[in-house]
Structures are given as C-alpha cells and as structure tokens.
Image 1: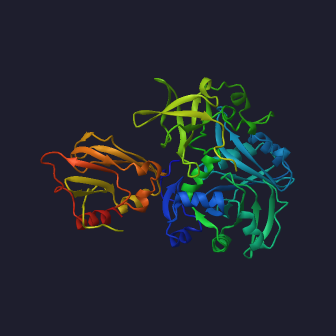
Image 2: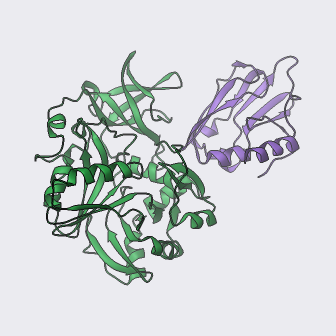
Length: 361
Length: 128
C-alpha cells in the first residue's frame, strides 16, 4: 500500500477531529488524511479485530447511487459480476472493466430495490469511476450520482461485532446474513447496515449521513470497539486474501488472471473481448516466505537466476508471524506448492506459492 | 519521549553506549515510536568488520524498512538474538532489551563524534 501517496491538499473525513483526540497518527492515503494507527499500534488493532471487535473510519471510500428502470441492465454491462442476480437488500463484490482488458476499480454493489442500487468504490478511484459510469450510463435509462460527500462509512469488524450492535440497537441480527442489508436506528441515528467487510471476520459496514457519523463513532467506541487505522486494515485484508486496488489490482489487470476470476460472469459487458480473449502471462497468487522477513510491494520474484514476477503487497502476519504476500508470477510457476524466491535487499529469500486466504475467517 | 543521558546518539536515531570497551547499539524511543510496531530485524553477522556510517542492520515495521547505521567503526562482537522471535522488544524496551548489536571499536575509533542527550533532543524537536 502506498501510504505516502500524497497529491495536493488532502481531504478529511467528518471524524478528523475525533481521530486527533484519540492521538491517531495521520497519513496521506489516496488524497485523504487518514488514521494510520492509534497509540494501540497496528498489531493490537489487528488482533482486536481477529479476537474481539474493531471499528474503522472508511468515510474516504466513494459512494454512488445508480437508480432508474435501466439500472439493472446498466450494471450488468458496466460491472463484471451479475447485478441482475442480486435480490433487494443484498450486496456483491464486483469489478468495473475498462476497454483495454483491465480494470477501472474494484467495487461493492448493493441492491435496495428493483431499480435502486448503490456502489462503494475506492477513494483513489472515485472521480474516475464517477466519470466512467456517468459516460457509460448515457445509453441506459438510469442515473449515476456521486453521493460520497453526503455519506459516511464505518466498518465494524470482528467476532464481537454482531453482539455489540444487537445490544446497542436492541435488535436481533441472526437472520441478517453475509452480504445482507438492513436499515435500523443506532445511537438515535438512522443507519444502513451491510454484513460485509474487508478483514475476513464477521462484521458490518455502516452507512449514514455524514452529519450522523460522529455520534455513531462515539457510541461504538464507547461500547468497547477498538479504533483501528489503515495499517491494521491492510494487514487484515492481506491475511484474508483480499486484493487492494492500486497495489494487487491495477488498470492493466485482467481479472481472469487473479483468484477473483469468479467475479467475471459470462454475459455481455464493457470491454468483454479484451478481457475474455486474453491469455495470462502472469497470475496473481498468494506467497509465504519460508523464513521470517517482509516481502514488500515491488520486490522481485525469482526461480534460480530467472526473474519470474513481482510482489504486489506484503507484510508479516500479526497472527501467524509469517511473511505473507501477494504477487504476480509467470503462469507456469503460479501453482500452490511451487518453490520460488523473493529478492529482499539483494538476498534471495525462499518462498512458496500458497492458496489464499492465509487465515480462515 | 525518553532520552537517557548515559549514552550518545546519532542524528539517524541510533544510540550507542560504551561499557568495558564494547559499544552497544540500539534505536531511540523516538525512532521506535515513529516506526510503529517492529515486525522484523535483520542483524549483522558476528565477526563482521564495519565502518562508522555503514548500514549494518535493518529494522522493519509494518510501514517501512529502515537502515541502521554503525555509530562507530570496529568489529561486531554480538547481536541480540532475542529479536528474531520478539522484534517487539524494540518498541517495548528501546534502551534495554531491545538493543541491536555490539561493536568492539577499532583502534582510535571513538564515540566522541556523536551527540549527547541534549543535542539529540533538539534533533527530535526539529524533526517533529
């Protein structure tokens, strides 16, 4: 993750002051000034989510509404997963293809009603996603609107998430399944819960009006959730085998060459010929270092003296203490069990191709 | 931020403490706080000869990898093996159990070129 990706004046979420009060270390991320970590530290924040409950301010993410009679057909064309298979109050992971055999962004799509959808995209891709979708939507009977300024987003993640919400909202969440949506009142504010996340744990993403997020944040942290920053968000998502757009996935990535190829459904979609027809010279795989170390973005992969790929993101798992990574590897080596090496500061460190995820959620 | 006055400091945030002709080296409280959770340490081989200013070790946090420079030239006569399994000792006890390596200074090598606690404190204040 390029945490120092600072370009121009940085934007702040409505919780900026709340983060400072908690003594967060703020960093630039995709044009936003966000908490990297709180004084608790990345490892403890990570373990809080694996063992208890943590809360992240992810209000930097972009939110768009897609509404109108043609919304389903539009999303079936503009996104790789099939939004037509979504029932109301359900959500799915998806990706937006470009016309060059790659991706505009990876996204989550939520269906509220028949012609009523919304989408969450990455902070860094927001402006491009909006431009791209607005342009594509001119051919369809639907409207794409950027709602990012109106909405705030918190992610409550960890095995204790449901109990915390059930107590605070006096509700029963048993039948809110993974990828389900429900509107309810939380700390006196109307919120929309989605049982989704980016950590590999049970958890919820909580959408609300930007003006309500401070009350909900204070309520949730007051109820015992550990505030967590982008550092822990990155180590958690990597352990869980989720890709980060901008590191593991880029505008050049053919999704069929990744472990997320299940997203691509056989239907007509934008740029289909370039994605469907292409061969994968390299594939995205999971990697484990055979000894302790950190394989970072851009480190090269070898088979003997032959360069065969590159790390796209890596860390040390706070749970297993092993060096874990994702990387792009020439196709013939991209098989679990394959022995390779990672060049770390001039040394070739042995590593093994493994299945994702690194931990079971 | 603690800066004990029983040792000397490098502008690059290492500390060095001489005892019985051997210099113990670690990173400062300020440095560990800036790095965040340390997850991996690469230490020099014992017996290696180093010059002052050589990058001889690497401390990796979740965020970044940082070179550690030898504050004095000489022979590496010991490394802190405990860091292999407990790199977090650097965060917890930067001036004690979190030490990195020990150097026996070569002839004429001295710590006198390094900063005292007061001078190092002003370095950290300029930084922040």
